[in-house]
Picture (tube, each protein chain N blue to C red):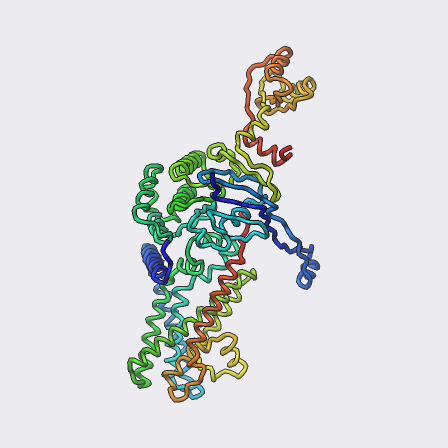
Length: 267
Length: 333
C-alpha cells in the first residue's frame, strides 16, 4: 500500500468534487434557483451595508472604502468554510441518527472523508462578489499594488479562512457531546457577521472576546490592518497566520477526538 | 488453518446514566448523576479461519453490533484482545479498514448522488486498487449478477434491494480479507434475498473472503453458514457448525395430521392420550412433537391411527429457526 500523502487526498478530493458538480448540474431547476438565491443574498448583504454608510460616512476613523475593504476581505475569507466545510451543518443529524458510523470504515482520514462529501457551490458567488468588492475598494483607497502586497493578501486571506473553519469545526463537533448542538453552530455562524467591522468600534469587553475567545477579529480586521494601516500594525496582525494554523489544528483535534469517542447507536 | 480473526476474552462495558423518573427525577439528574455499568459483551472468545462464513446470531440487543463494531475498529474493547488480519482494529483503524469490507443492511455507504460506477471508481482510488484487479473484479461481478442496469443509476434512485446489492458489491470491490454483513437481507423480497445469498456465496467461494454475517433470517443461515455463533445478553451461548446444532435437537420431529371434526377439540383428546408429547392445533393441522429417542414417529402414528381416521399427514424436521428459538429460550444444556 502506498503512503497517502497530500497528493493522494487532493486527487481524491478533485474526483469527488467533479462527480458532485456533475450530479448537481443535472438537477437544472435546483441549480438555477440556488444560483439566484445566492446572488440575492449577496446583494441584500451589500445593500444593508451601503445604507448603513450612507448615514455614517465614517466609523471610528474608518472611511467608507476602508470598511468596504474589510467587507470584501471577510466575504473572501468566509468562502472556504462555505464551500469546503458545509457538511459540518449535517454532522448533528448523522450523529443523532447513527448514520455517522458509515464514515468510519474507509482507509482514509475520517475528517477529510466526511468533509469531502459536500461541496457547496453557492460559496463561489460569494467569492466573486468579495473579490470584486475588494478590488473596487483597493482602487478607491488608492493603495499601491506590488507582488509583495498580493502575497501578503493571499497569506492573510488563507489564515483568516482557517480561523472561521476552526470556529465552525469546533462548534459542529459539539454534537458529539451535546444533543442540541444546532445552537452552538448557529451562534458561531452569527458571530461571523461581526467580522466585517473594525474591532475598535466595540467595547473593551467584546474586543477581548472577539480577539481571544471567539477570534473573529482575525477573520478580517487584524489581517486587513497589514494592508490598510501599514504604519501601525499591531503584533496580533503578524501573529494571525500562526493563530490561524493553531486554531485550525486544535479544532481538527477536537473534531477527531469527538468522532473517535462516538460509538454509534445500536442497529 | 490459521485464524484471520482472533478474539480473546473480550468484554465491552458501557457507562449508562441511570435516569430517575418524572420531572423531579430529571431535575435531580441535572445535579447528581448515577451511572451504572452495562456489560454489552461479556468475555467472548472465538477464532475464525480464512474463508469461513460465520452466522453471528442473537436476539435484539444481544451484543452483536457491539462485537462487530469492535472488530471493525469503531469501538475499543474494555478488556481482552482482538486481532483482525494481524491488526488491532481500534489502534489501526485505517489500516484495518483496508483489509475489511462492511455492509449495514439499512445504511448505504455509497455516495448518494453518484451512479454506482462512479462510486466504484472513487473506491478504486481510495483503496488504491490496481487497474488489473479492478477490471477482474468488475468482470467477476458481471458474471455473477446483472449489474449493467445498476451501474449508471444514482444510488438514491435505487430500490432497497438494488442498493443493498450495490453496497455488497462495493464492500467486496477491494478484495478484502473479511467482509462484515450486518443484516444484509433485512426488508428485501424473497427473490432479492435469494439473489443476494447466491452472490455472497459465490464471492466467498471465488475470493476466499471470510464473511461474518449477522441476521435474524434463518434462510440466510441455512443458505450460507457452515458455522454459527450465538450470543445473548453479551454471553456466548453456542459456537459450532450448524449440522451439530441440528443433531443436538435432531431427535425432535413434528408429526402433522389432519382428522375429521373440530381440530382444537381433537388435539385436546390426543394430548390426553399422549401425555409425553406436546400437541397443538391450528386451522389446518394438529401438530405432535415427537422425541424419537423416546418413541418413534411410526409408533405414535400407529397409535393414533387406531382411534382416528387420518385424512392427511406430514412429517417435519425441526428447522434451524426453531432450534435457535429453543436456544434463545432455554440455552444449550
